Image (cartoon, rainbow, N blue to C red; front, side, top):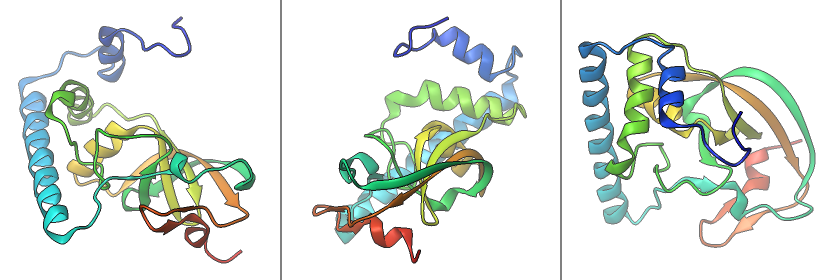
Length: 185
């Protein structure tokens, strides 16, 4: 249907998200309120990170990965996972902070489309995550995580793949050790 690395047209994405239904005025207004609130929270968090000198960008798993770091992985299945346990992304994720609040207002159309669908009661497909210990890294569904957090949801459905790592994977800039996140074996 679409090339592997290309995205479907926006109209196809929108119609799939909204399940072919036209959004009502209440859903649109609710989504816009949520988006303004999420942007405000992101700005407050950014100001706080500047004052407290604490890094607010998500942990990027690719920054830590090396050739022999993962010694075992297995697909777990579809699980309900706590949003607060999603601490980062598999690859670069400049659109969101560490709590998945939006960082740039020009990304609003995709965020709002997902928020409108959720306001209309359209169920969200599961996101994809990598689990290390009790923590998760988003592979897909960054916008879904952001919208769910803004809506006050605590749990998301996700396709979970568990990684076990065999040595310390450090990133000196972030001072995070993924081996320690894994916990005792």
